[in-house]
Image (cartoon, rainbow, N blue to C red; front, side, top):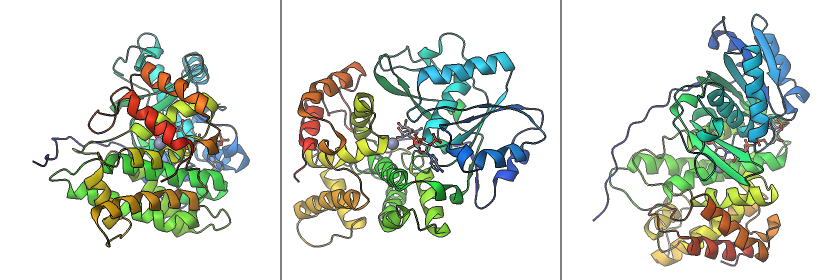
Length: 398
Ligand code: NZQ
Ligand code: ZN
């Protein structure tokens, strides 16, 4: 018998401020009495003038700055910002950047208010996974559409010494607001644009490509429409010379909705591509989205039977494959997915991202250390299945 959609509560408190020249509205979004710490990454916001625009918009505020939050933000760097907050007394954080800056800032916001050792905000073999009871208010200005962090309560942080990349979730770290100016994406290089398309694509798939659920036409319909959008605009998005407002606007809003938890309401999810991918970033620092792209076709191929009904639906509704048996449709959808990723210059095998046969033991051991021993929508992806996926992904032949 088909399973029904589970009970759910959907509560997303983030205000989205979308469009052209929205940074000046900061002065209406942040209460006037706040002392604001502006957080940013390796310098792109300085180079491209975004930070100057922010400073101008906050001319009447007491502000400070903390730069240097790296891609795949580290615990150590974030804790330096926490110290600064405690020393200088900031009571609002404004993150200006991509997923790394926003994630790092969410952790900083929670750690600054945390009673105890902030490492315990995390679980998964790193800390004790305590509840975040409060956090400093956080606003964001998104410069890279990809992670959805601008409208969710997730933060992923890297612990270098513990060789771990782990996340925590809390309603307390949803941004109060996020400014989405599609024109801020015009300075992104092709590699980051392709990463953004891919990360969003995989976020949607991991909430959609599981098993059919009664009463989830809305979730499926949203997912299918967003996937078709990315397939349609992907090649134009990655053309860094083509600074087309409409295309970038579609891209930015798709990436946000892809992981603002709207698609996962009451339906199963399969975050195994992300789980397997995070371990690769820990191993050799490959960009987050490139790990996903290198793993996804192998996941679909190894898990074809488990995902069969949804794969056929995906083939018909997303790729418009109407001919042939269900088997033929499912296979064709996997091939189309890999071809799409290739067409936007993403890797579709582990060899392309410098992972070798001899690394697989380490990757599987890491999955075990982080409690990822029974993952996917049914919890039946054991370490042995994950090993098969890594092996298959080495040199993909599908
Ligand atoms: O650091 P700067 O100098 O700003 O440069 C960044 C960085 O080098 C650059 N960049 C950002 N905006 C730019 C720009 N360059 C030119 N013009 C702009 N407008 O892009 C580089 C990558 O930035 P990063 O923030 O690291 O990328 P992304 O947004 O892909 O974030 C990746 C991180 O997010 C986590 C990933 O694991 C990874 O740590 N994720 C967070 C999620 C969440 N919070 O829900 C879910 C995701 O699945 C993901 O795991
Ligand atoms: Zn992701």
